[in-house]
Amino acid sequence: MAPRDCAGPPPPPLPPQAWVWPRKMLAMGVLAGFWVLSLLTYGYLSWGQGLEEEEEGAMRPQTGERPEPSITTISQPHLIFILADDQGFRDVGYHGSEIKTPTLDKLAAEGVKLENYYVQPICTPSRSQFITGKYQIHTGLQHSIIRPTQPNCLPLDNATLPQKLKEVGYSTHMVGKWHLGFYRKECMPTKRGFDTFFGSLLGSGDYYTHYKCDSPGMCGYDLYENDNAAWDYDNGIYSTQMYTQRVQQILASRDPRKPIFLYIAYQAVHSPLQAPGRYFEHYRSIININRRRYAAMLSCLDEAINNVTLALKTYGFYNNSIIIYSSDNGGQPTAGGSNWPLRGSKGTYWEGGIRAVGFVHSPLLKNKGTVCKELVHITDWYPTLISLAEGQIDEDIQLDGYDIWETISEGLRSPRVDILHNIDPIYTKAKNGSWAAGYGIWNTAIQSAIRVQHWKLLTGNPGYSDWVPPQSFSNLGPNRWHNERITLSTGKSVWLFNITADPYERVDLSNRYPGVVKQLLRRLSQFNKTAVPVRYPPKDPRSNPRLNGGVWGPWYKEENKKQKLRKNKTEKKQKKSKTRKKQQKAGSFTNCRLGVPRG
Image 1 (tube, helix red, strand yellow):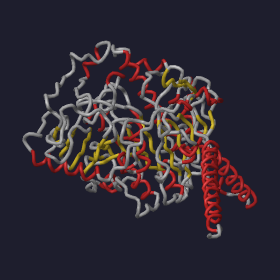
Image 2 (cartoon, one colour):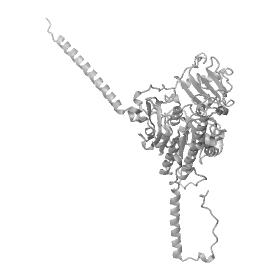
Image 3 (cartoon, helix red, strand yellow):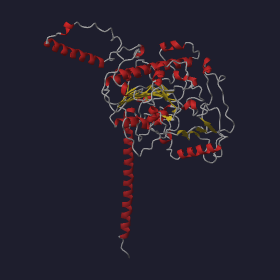
Image 4 (cartoon, helix red, strand yellow):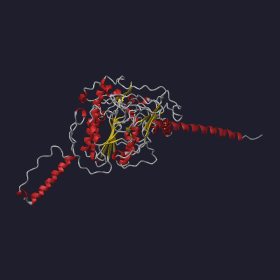
């Protein structure tokens, strides 16, 4: 499509005498034409660099399509992964939501919708599995999230996705929420493969001030530029808009002829529920205040993704880009999210906690405008993106993800037939669980969930299990009287569902198909044999931001480590010295005895 305002009526035909030009004038005209053409080309390629910003720092939405500058194509695609936070399964226009998401709807309709797509029920696990291609049981992060005060992070011996992409020439950039630990400098995003990082280290915080209190007296600033606190950005800009600005700056400064990996992990729509005032205009009819705020936040996020897409087009990246959109877990009804008609919510292993909104949008897709119902999991992005980048995965690395590009792009069958949703040996045990209930194969007191083809098995305590219909949001909060409440049967610690036939988990088949239950319990047991120990250390008081200049950040100093090593070495030397002295004394005493003349 031609640029707007550039087309007009065709000029009238020239008279025959106008074609009679002296040769010098013709040559000068040709040169002048080239000069004008070069100016136009330069201006066209730099188009968009002076775009005005809207209130609170956001780029003003643009209307219409812009032609992308002509760029020499490269074999490696640009990889853009956008991760939303706590977006519910229903909370997108094409799933029937009352919340308007025109950008997501359009991108998904022109791409491939993933309608059998799974993530983890909470933040850290989904992010760790995306960046490593491994289940939680294989990184030690199978319990809860990484807390701000814990000396814990994504294990350093795991090769991350950005590290693998850098090996094949990609520039790697992260904008947004990290939430994979930061107690040591080696845990920071820039030490795990990203060339640049701009965002937060914790799981949540104020959208404007970027402060976070983990507990009384444990408060600090949480916004980073690479490895340092970004105090210069402490000016009250809403994080969704601020992160979008940074993405635009990155794209404006990079060469589209060189491959780029851009990981955009938005804070929205995680609590606290905050949004700029103008986004509330379309949702005055929503009585529930949490739902109204949530809707405003999601509308702002949708606009941000529109601006990211426009920037990709403006700066010459779009035609060779693969855009992946995903939520990190299900929505939280008490914080405005909706997973209807799925059961459960964020933090649970019911479908409402782990089945996510997801799609792929790209000019490189072979089958556009389609729906993929094949089984896809968040661990699959690791091998898929490395393969698209023409990278290599070491043979000795045991991945849990699969390359599913042909499944998405061409509609082929997925290589994945099962998903280990998790095994958490620390989570609160089900009172009624036992080895007997697990046929001697598995202790059903342990929280676990697994999917094998059509079947899904849950054991232990799966979490909050209500269905929360849309009308629940008509009151001041999700009213339990409106919910379809489920009272778990006495002695119940095993559930079996045919998810293909019953995606809403309404009919428990565990008593009807004990043979299937046993098969899935054996599969759980096999997975558990490969699990590494859980990493969930106690709180470290040295993590307090007060001890770190008021900033959340690495507190484990390398100097302390060296001092401990030196101390240990000194102690060992002292012990050896004492042992030698004792040996020498003992030896001299023996020699004296041996030297005594016999009578």
